[in-house]
Length: 283
Ligand code: G3H
Ligand code: ZN
Image (cartoon, rainbow, N blue to C red; front, side, top):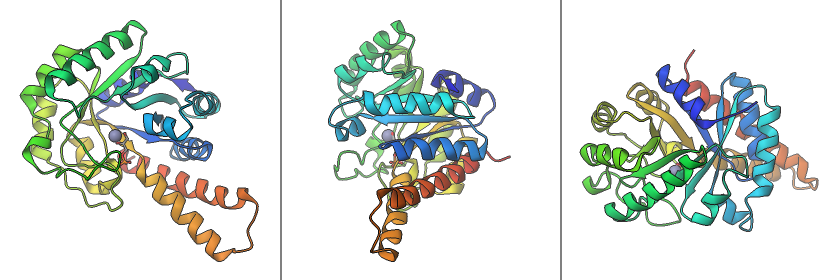
């Protein structure tokens, strides 16, 4: 069933659990995320990033409509989230396209500009009943930019500043920079659990972990125990899909029907989704 991101995150926070949010690029991603969540028996967030919209020739609706339909027919609660939005024109499409939430990404801007842009986005979103997430500090690694050193002190979210940012913008959740980096292809990130503890104690909104593909299982479990409520995962699906298709095509050089390899890629993504949800929500 189609539900709102706000209700999934609120329920997860109350239970001191986390909800997994997977970035989708193709219809196969959408089907895999729903299948994996159904197999795990857990709710899930389907998220579409601004970069995914760019890949879809700048059009949000084809993927959004597919995601809405998949959510409506899912056997578990599924919410739709528009991720890493930088452009106001995309932000304004969110409600009509079926999204109950957005992540407004002005984290690359200097503090004062991030604050002003995020506050304006939050006012706009709240007037339309949307739940909004923002980022402070910089998780980094997006758009092919050299991953900034996640361990450099300046890259991390500072607790006092984060508290003021949340109060001044009115956002519903905050993405924090605690050591993860976007688009990692190895699961070797180490998180700053002391900083997370400090942030969780100082902030009264749910905290979001970005770049979670590079975070190993034990670190993910510890992050959830430490106060992370939404875990964003993208690259792990690409890794699973691409490896499965590469293996399949190497073993079947005669393959022609695109369903053969797309099906293999989709199944590999569904397995990854199920496994990661089980890691985040131990029985
Ligand atoms: O917002 C999306 C996530 O931060 C995904 O990051 O691709 O490194 O897992 P990832
Ligand atoms: Zn992200």
